[in-house]
Length: 344
Image (tube, rainbow, N blue to C red; front, side, top):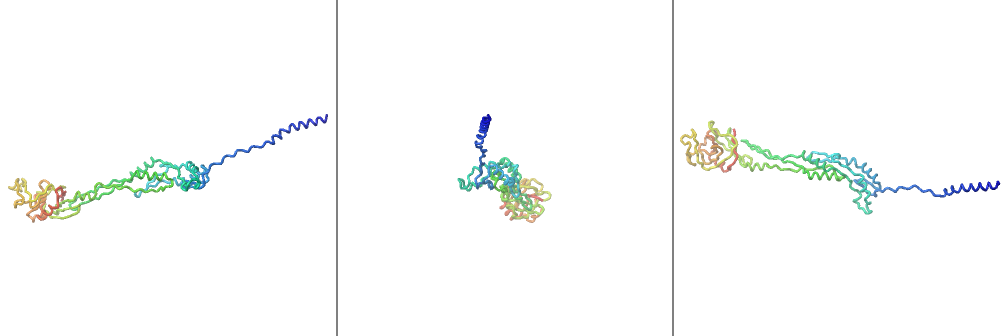
């Protein structure tokens, strides 16, 4: 009986131990290994920053660290000595580092199907073209100036000329392209210069010299007639002016008519005596209008006289008397329409 119990116990022991032995023989399965992340090929960079062997995430972080401060610089546009700045927040400028890194990842290494030019890729950047247009329009408004026409002020002694001046305009289309290009290429220079376009005045000094090719002035106080040609003094003549009772008119006039040996239409005036209202043929002794006549206004004109002693005095009935030789000389130099200034 005792022997049987021993045999049975051994049998039970074997039966219990068998499953444990079977489990110990089964091999354990190793944990899954994640696939390696894709890396940028050696020799590839962007914006001058080496991105070799970096993942996209690492490359984007490196680009921000290396370039953010550099790319935050404003565009400085110099126009005629003045500097105008377009800040990056205003331009809504941004670098897409993630996209730049992805482009680098897709680029083969130089010499492995790629080219040396691909070793440094451009940065992917964006900006607001509307902001650029607004900036350029603002600069254009601030630097613009209108041209100034030349002007002439006639005095009895001088032709006072204020010379013309150029106006200036900023070529907005060209400037817009220049600023856009500086922002589109992150490596481009951001200190820009743009010359202004000159705008000519409609009237310059040469135009005035043609328009006022001949000018006559009479200074009553000195009994002087001045002849100006092309805005410069050409000749001076002594003249007689009107008596106090018959003063020579003052103001701005012009030569209305010209005659050689003019007929004298005698005014109906007490001083004319019995000749009043008549006409006296030119070239006769009774005609006081000697040699030449240049009519100015209301019967007043420039003429020669037989009374040479009156020159330099106030002796006429309003006209301007000249020596016969002088009036002949002046007559040839003065066209109809010549401006005439008579002043004290």
